[in-house]
Image (tube, rainbow, N blue to C red; front, side, top):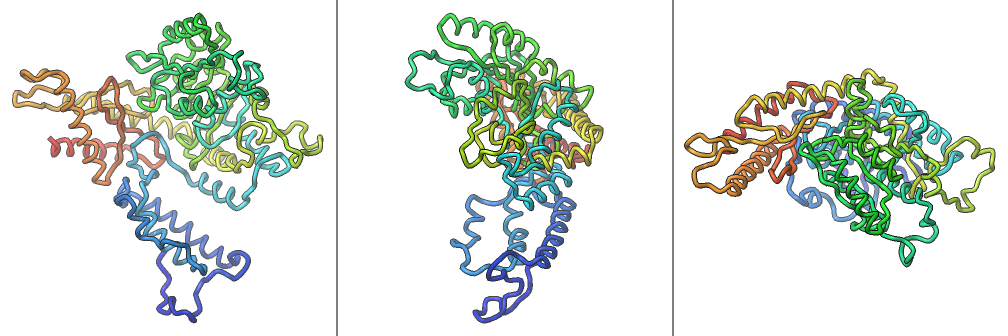
Length: 518
């Protein structure tokens, strides 16, 4: 989008090309022209994205200092605005859609999803009630029914779309609390001597959003008990059972367990079947956080791994914006007792009351969460499911898992590197353990006279330097975690444009960087 040429643009009396009209919106002609130019720019962006550094190569506040300190008094031509997107905004982005973006978790957008987002913005509906956006209300049910069938979940699971898994899990825990029938909706928690401490359980590997959920719901962090994980970073179901029994003896009220399918650090999968046994014995609400890994359930051979016993859960969340190539944001909460979620949040003020004929057999989105107005998110998911189809989406997820296993095989075959966690899906946790002394001893071998903690610190420092050096090249972006106290590198495959060549290049770059870092 080149900047429009106009030598007299700043002259006070000069006509401004493409200037906005004094009232009303952009003309249809101008909208069409800029729309075509913008689609062309986006197409070129994806075509040439590998020429851009993955990680933004700017300094803090650099963009702020390059922009005016106040909005313009008079409107500016759209050509100038779009030119500045190209010149100033795009270079200040970390490009999550880059095929060598291997940080954090599987993510990328897709063309049908972008079209869906564009149409949603054009329609600009607020899906409060069925009558305010019938298509949005009904398409959400259709798209989530399709996805539920692809996942093999039972018909009794009804779905609701939120923005992120953090919000989905918060609503699930709120439903679990409502299911206690303690009149918390009306009476609250504070100032009630009749209520014991309500207890939520999650693995020590669970996402921090569970901590935030108990904070936001007024339960407090002391209500969340973290259960130890085993050597493969999965919740210890026996430890969970013991914790529940202990809390009940101490007069606490256990009510909810959060199992994780695809933890943030390692993508470990909690033993849902064993956890469900505990929940059923003690009548606890079981919520499954499958934000990342849940999408893999559409792959027939992966479904037994990621969704085993999940049909026994009371609620389950997954994020199509992670591994189903959906533009951020779109998270799904499936609930086996959707009426409990409705009971927890339904609140209809007078101005939203509608005739009974408009409520029969339909769902008003505002009744299932804290948000009143809701975006038309289901449109982009529906378009993606139609464009790629079940088989197409499964093939892409299957390929990402193959690429991760391939990368892991290279790590295992090279004595200078080691795996630090199993690789069930598309994330590889590893680190460099090169020779660290003249004798050629590896990082796990004991250097003469060097304490264990000193050797561990040297390896941690080496891997941190390695990560930053590799990321600073702009050729890839990887992230890290800590496993058993070790600084751990993470390579997450999940971009729709990532190929084996990109993974091979990443491996080569890491090895070259290791050589220069030592």
